[in-house]
Image (cartoon, rainbow over all chains, first blue to last red; front, side, top):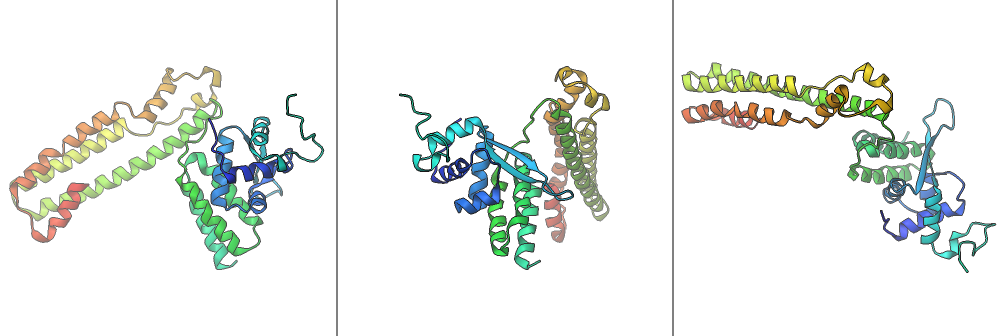
Length: 102
Length: 205
């Protein structure tokens, strides 16, 4: 199933590409991308439904409710690299043309 | 806690409560993020944005067959609540129509009201007999997931309860039992003017 390529989705994907291996929190993504919760979460839900986003609950402190975290899956990473314009898609330390066939 | 944050929390709790099963986790995730939003007005905006989740109608995803008993339990609770509402509504109808029996002296109206009560009782009986929630047996829960087959007895019982196959047809027949009562009551035409609204309400029920 195709995901609609909206500027907001690209923003979210590029935020994930900043540190692809790190788990991210909803509010942090919202702050960094300037997206409202009503825009951000439907995008996250769509990404998760298409298995592009991995989710998990993390307990930070004992006795406190866990927090939801997100990370791109391998497929999601591939998809993000296809969708996000080249300026922001290559994390530091990764060759810029690694995915390009000669 | 400021009013804005209290309101934000209230909104998010409502969203968590009314979100569809598939979106519940996401609503809870948004609620959890509230603790990390310092500004109260930002928190309120966050909560207002979360209401969009209510528009998402998603069934709870079943990751594996082992989730089926849990989903069945949830469904059982849902059906029990629905039936409770139906029983309460039926009791209301019976009391209301019973009052009509005492208020009117026409034999035809009384017969009509009695028929409505009989129809209601028949519908309640049908609902109880055919549409009541079935308990998920312990044996079903203990059984290995690989054993599961909707054609098995307990499996089919649950799926039958879930789909309500055959129940709607019988409920339709039960609803038909109201017709003679309403018809005879209408035909007699002896309604007290100030009670017409109540009669209309009862008829709609």
